[in-house]
Amino acid sequence: MGYEHLTSAERAHHDEYCKLRSISDWPGFAAAQGNRRDAARAWLEAQRKDIFRRAEGNVAGVQAG
Image 1 (cartoon, rainbow, N blue to C red):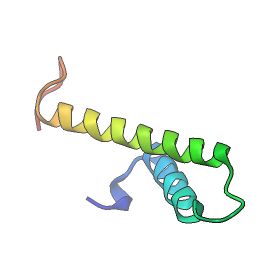
Image 2 (image 1 turned 135 degrees about the vertical axis):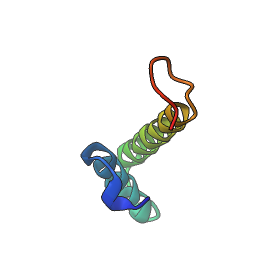
Image 3 (image 1 turned 90 degrees about the vertical axis):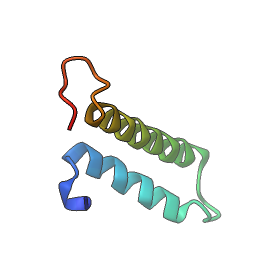
Image 4 (image 1 turned 60 degrees about the horizontal axis):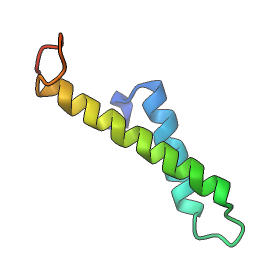
């Protein structure tokens, strides 16, 4: 699965995380930017876990697949 299969929300979080990660070693990188990077990563991880739970049939009312 590639970038083209992501939803618009997933793309937005992915893009934000990647951009902030790429500049995190710059001298002017602010703590607020680090917080946003961490929040974007946490959202992506939660989304991935939800997709796996659904695929494995571990969500009530959702067929595995």
